[in-house]
Length: 305
Image 1 (cartoon, helix red, strand yellow):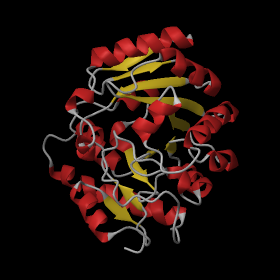
Image 2 (cartoon, helix red, strand yellow):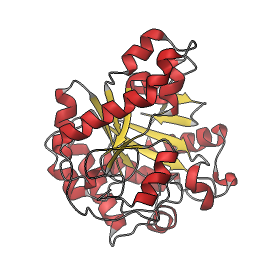
Image 3 (cartoon, rainbow, N blue to C red):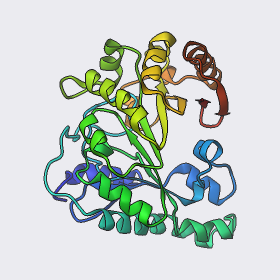
C-alpha cells in the first residue's frame, strides 16, 4: 500500500481490520457489540445512551496511519504511526463505498447463522451510523467536511471522535457531526504527557484550544475520559475546570480495557473495576455540578449530564 507499511497493514488485518480505498489510509473493523446485537446478546452503551442501533453501526477511520499521540492505553501497534498527513488521500464517497462493502463482507457469515436475528442481519447490511473513531486521528484527514457531508447525504448519523490536537481543523469544519467527542484524559499537563505521550510540541495547549472551541458547536457534544487506575483517576476539581471550559452536553467516564498492544505498556492493574469508575464519576459530578444520568456495567462506563 502506498500509504501504510505493508507489515503494519497485515498485522491489523489479522486483528479484523479491513483497509479500503486506493491509498491505504482508511479502514473498517466490525465492533464486538455489532456482532452481539445481531445475535441478541446485548448492545453497545451508545445505543443505551444515545439511541443509535448497534447492529447498524459502521466503525471506521479515514486516517489509520496518523495520530499526534501514542497513548499508553491505545490498543494499536503505534510503531508505524505518523504525526502529520503524508501523501494523497481518497475521496469521501470512495471511502464510504469501500467501508460499507467491507462491513457487509465481515458480517456475511451471519446470513447463515441460526442464532442470528434475521431482521437485524438484513438491516446490518445497510449501516446508518458512522463511528469515526476506529484508529488514528480523524481530524488529520484532509477532507473531513466532505466525509461528514457525504455520510449525512446518505442519511447516516455521525459520531466523530478527536483527540483535540488539531483545533485549527476543528474550527474550519462547516459540516458538523451528529455528535462530537473530544478525548479528555488528564486533569493537568504532566499527567497528560505521561498518559497520552504527545508527539508534537504544544499539545496540551492545542487540546485546551479545542475545549474552548467546543461550545461553538451546535451538535451534541461529549467529553470522553478513559479512566486508567493509578494514573489519571485523580484531581476531579482539575477535570471539572476543563469540563466547565468545554461546556459539553455529556461526559463519559469509561474504564481503560486491558486489550491489544496496550498490554505492552500498561498492566492489568491499570484497568479499573466498574465500581471504581462509578466512584470516580461521582467525584467528577460533585466537582463539576453535573449528574450521573446513566451507566453500562458491561462496558464499565458512566454518563454525566
